[in-house]
Image (cartoon, rainbow, N blue to C red; front, side, top):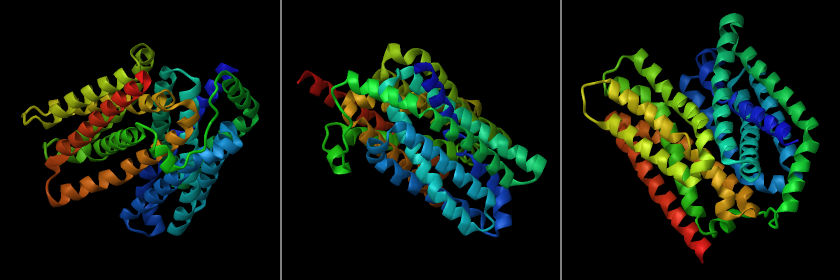
Length: 392
């Protein structure tokens, strides 16, 4: 049962990543057909992100009532229906409509699975699962590329991913007894039962504010790095467009590969030490990016180092949540963490775009450094609070 459920969760994480890059991959073909400006992709992305935040904040209440397995299955099904809706859309307003269930489904499954793994499995699985999310996010564009090349249709690309999501949803429905057994065993082995916490109640728990700020800062740094890396390398460092795009993509490869490696050492070193190591590697990478040297290879290597440094932080913060705040509070707090994560990754990169436009894109590494410092301060403050609480 343990192994079967773990396989299902790995499949679910791949599924979670599959649709994430579809809009960006397909949009150059979509917006002329829909007769809208190229900038309208941002509207769809914002609708998805907004509903993901809403869903994440309400996951705790829904899971307490229906259980992780059923919520995950329904959420994947909602995402699948939304993808079929995208494939059938012939007007921009239709995309906006289907973006609502897409965001609601994605937010719920993300928060539900992260908490389930944090409670039931070792830290190595959290790292590997997020590595598998990267696998899904990489496969999605290939499916869309095949559809555009062979079938000359972005709609078939969305439909293909929708079919994969439907298959997974059916598998999850048939596996519900396995999820229920696991949750019952957990309930028998621990005294704490899951609580429904309102946001203001969660914020009163010592350390929650610090972890939310740290999580916000991490997602802001990751999203800003990925979105603006190529532009910075081209416009400020004078690197050719093709080379800049190729090396910027290695930032994400660094995250994926780093999480694969983290799985082998996370349990031995512990989540807190892995976060410290990650922050240190990011600092070295940012130093390489910011150094005013003529050798163009140094900032390129710096981007890879930033990716490797980012790798352990997200999964380790999530996995440490039950230990820091109690298993009875973890679902509520992880839901809020997911909401702050999406907020950071949605709002902060466009703000840098304004800085780049009205000031200079040379501020890129300085901007990223601010979030690195914020992460360092908040995670260390959190550690001191938790240690003090454990001793007291």
